[in-house]
Image (tube, rainbow, N blue to C red):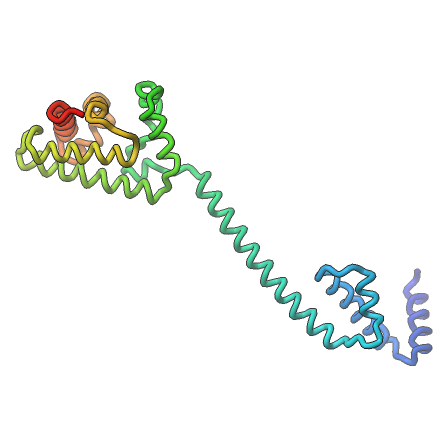
Length: 234
């Protein structure tokens, strides 16, 4: 249909209704606006038509009510979007691999997974350690790192003071170290702790980590752990 034909028909309707074309167009726009607003609020077309055609229909009141309802709907939508964003952020944290090397000052426990699994993969201790550590987040790992650092610092202080590895204070530290492993990783008997301590001196990566705190610390801690296992037993 040509614009002239459409305008002509609108003009005819306007004359019949004793309205200007502009007023008629305005009425059409308001009605269309009402329809769209009601549709956004979930009303069906039949219900909207009945409402618009009702003799007591108040256009201003309808517009004010719709505006309030749509404003509430917008606020609810923004709240839902914010909740979804929080969920997405939480999922991203869960699936993003932790950079354990940065937490442990360059020593990456994950780099030893193959050797650890080869040595203890069939044990209950390995299964329990895997279960526990899978649930740790960055804050947990930093707490664990802090506890371990404090223990090694105390070992280093005993070494610097000239204490032998079988001194009571040093053996107490060995026991504290075992309990740290027991609480954070897996049930660790003194015998198992002695086996783990072999890595401190056999694996140069472990040795370097211990000796970075104080030269000779790896052998000092390993000796104390072995002596503690022999002296106290299980």
